[in-house]
Length: 138
Image (cartoon, rainbow, N blue to C red; front, side, top):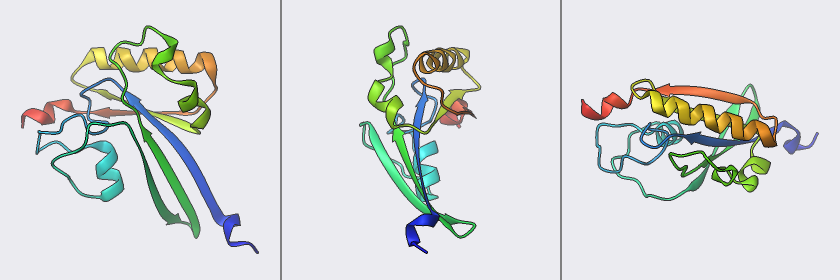
């Protein structure tokens, strides 16, 4: 039996409005935990870079090796054009995580627009994650 038969690779595109805590947009807020970095490192990091990145994480689940690649996208607040989400991102992705703030209705509207744009191009599974951006002020 080939060792690669038990390896699963999943490419996940991470989207959402700005300032909802999906990635590294809060470089100076030491009490805010980024969803991506917290998941990958299991710890809080106080300062981040300000770039679009693909993070990789390998873990074992039920005896199978899981390689999870997360494309942490810098996404504009406005979703008025289809260029907002690139064809390259959509072709790469096996699924999409969309993050919005429970304290900011406009962030949910951005996510709603992102879903509409993606559905015009590809049929992908979605996961919605709500975040409490008011934690920035605690």
